[in-house]
Length: 281
Image 1 (cartoon, rainbow, N blue to C red):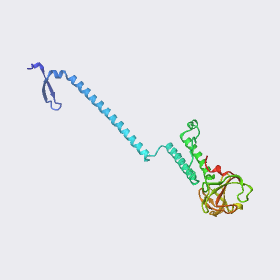
Image 2: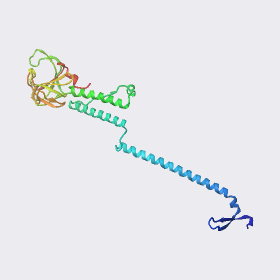
Image 3: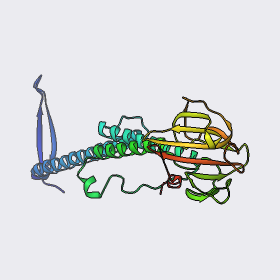
């Protein structure tokens, strides 16, 4: 049972017609009204904080998702890379193209290839350069190597088996006499292909003294190659030939005792040992 003091009457006055309404509530609720208000405020603040936190987390996840999507697209080439990355990529592509070309030259000469280490110098020198400068250095160096490989007579013009070496030997035709052999003799059968060992220009294609049917090719760096005792000549004077191109056929014309290829390398017009040019080492 409650007494009359346990209840209070609350009058609600209308703003328009002055009508009033009364509510009878427990007095203790009116006394606790400020506590209820405080609790409601705390609850609203907590809800607002939770909403803000969740919004930030969602925004962070969205940004991470967008960044991930852009990275995948960049790797697939759908988004252009930064300018410095494009420049570096161009240098790398240029280097790869030159290496591929060098390998092609070596393959045409019957050489497997070679390994290049520390092409850019020591680590300290490279560290002092920017990425772009380092790639440019590699690119220039490879350009020099490419030019050297293209126009230097490297590799084998015919069969790998050598019958006679460079230097003094007994004359195979004039028994008992000694002669200076200015090249290498490669074993072969009549009609076997003879290939140019470097890019160059044909300066002689015809009969030449004891060499019989002969081809002479002038290369850069004051180098020249000679192919003698041929059975057939496939090129003409003034013609530009490429590395690995078939220029003639093995024979036994001129000062010869059997089918083989006589091969010379000349530097500034003087014969040098062709064995030094057969491999890269």
